[in-house]
Image 1 (spheres, helix red, strand yellow):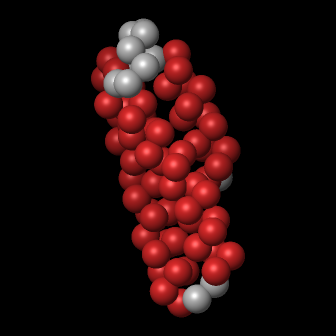
Image 2: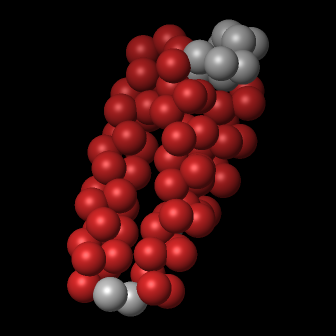
Image 3: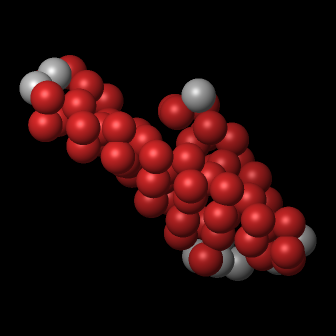
Length: 77
């Protein structure tokens, strides 16, 4: 397991973590447009979860990434 904090998988996870509060704010706004954007961001977040998991299984795993991915999962699921 690599120790590089800014691996590509970690950057993807960090982006997903930053999407969480944005999705929540858009849901609270509640307009049709904000709900559509929230849905689109949630789909992007789900896809990024798959991508960073794939990358981590292919050798880009880090200790920090394990914790960051778990925190992101808690935000979205």
